[in-house]
Length: 92
Image (cartoon, rainbow, N blue to C red; front, side, top):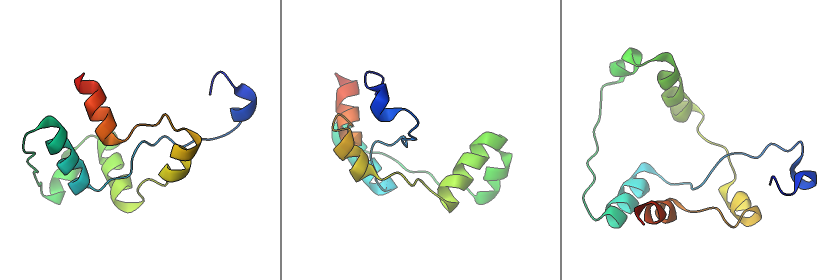
């Protein structure tokens, strides 16, 4: 993008990489890292003990979520990696 400022000047491009459920994230991580992933639940009142910014992030994900069009971004930026590709690349 920086090498083609005329194309991207003034555009707002959402940051995204993949669109997975937590179960898909867990399964992908377990497959690539070759070990089981454990999930932990915490009561909702714990949310209020978190710092404001972290609490706001969790609230945003639970109420609004992300709105990036991952398929369109991947078409425009084919260099985008999936979560699995990211995990495999970082392991090398």
